[in-house]
Image (cartoon, rainbow, N blue to C red; front, top):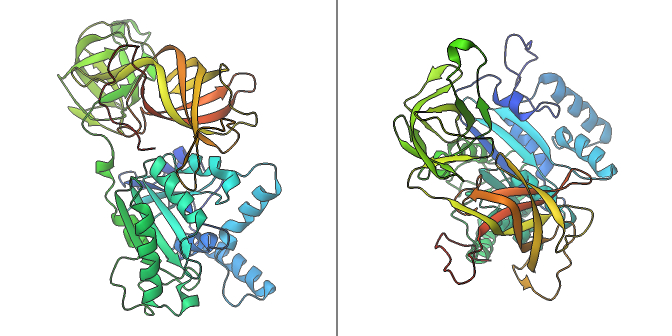
Length: 462
């Protein structure tokens, strides 16, 4: 188990609700790959216990943290050390407040760093699950072995599919309460597979576990010798995520234009940002959008280190051979790798605002590094999150609803369909009066002008 090593001697990789993602990402083990995953489960499925068990058995908590929850468990008369207490304290505080937020936890093993987005499972907190899952590489869906696949399980799987999370691990929990029977696990596997056949899910794995006892969480279970697959931690450590990014179509949203004031660098102009797709190489021809001007890459560097090639999700500063007027919000792309450029956009939106979504209402839009305004032109339909049914006769879009809408922006956006690139295909809607985020959008496509054919860039099945 981890000991209380001084911060000056070791990086802090223990769960810490006050630590930011940037602090965690830059702390210790800098060369290790980072996996973001979200957890989803129904009430009493054991999500808190699973997260606690994962942190404890991977030696990612301090001795004094364990001693504290052990003492609390003894006072409560619990038969086992209640590892759920590692996360339930924060959850209780959230549930007593006005809003329920996503809790992020951070830990690492010798193989990988992890960020857990611990999201509420209730249907009234759909917006929070969408927030936590929007950047996830992997989703853990918990199923109570006694209950099997229920409506909330279907809803969690649908949201994971809608958000294009590439990997899903279905943990059938509480196997100890069904005598670790293989037939129970296989029955749940068949039921979930039958349902998921109608979703756009590429990689689904099933693991029978007991979060309470630790079976197949970090260590292999001695009670389920019939299961010859990976433990949960092994699956998290070995899931291949580098190819999940779009490495074909090069995309660099310009975040900042660097113009040094020193006289010896008066002709320097660098374009800084985080690569959202593809691989850029020195000397490549690139196109700047929305202007359409073309140049070639002169140099690329990160913190003073030059690179002959750079790829997603690296943050770089790029210089070009030609002096071109480029501003924040523009996008640098491969010369022949066209994204869509349009003011008329169709998207799926998860509504997060207290006030309902309405047509002909204006909102601010933030898309990659570009900020514009838009007006909602049409609400096409709402989506029943539990059944995928399209609801055309009720267009009252309220908090936690998901709907398909069209908007017109004040300036063209440069984007890809969300199905091709989750970074350039997503945006948020902001209430200009309160400055609150009221909608998370997943772009389906642009809307072609009347009399023209739509480009075959792919579309959602919903």
